[in-house]
Length: 115
Image (cartoon, rainbow, N blue to C red):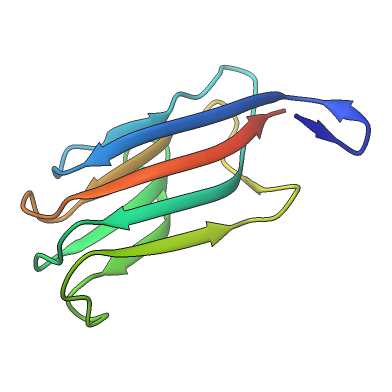
């Protein structure tokens, strides 16, 4: 991936999150920072609970959606676009997804790069 004339290693991951145990979507690299450019979240159903994406396992949630409160009653998609430079996670951390209800399923497709 090229940004302003510099080449960086592209990163991508696809994972289904369907449990309260954190799921690693993109594996971090020691000494490198993961920058997220684009994330698509496909929610298959709206069980009572919330889904979240975190900076590391048990880390800070930068996306959290309470699905019933949002009025979602069926399949929907959420798009997060962090632009060309991306959203930086903490150095060495992976991107994780989790849910507060084991009956809630969503699929995450994430694109970014390591710097």
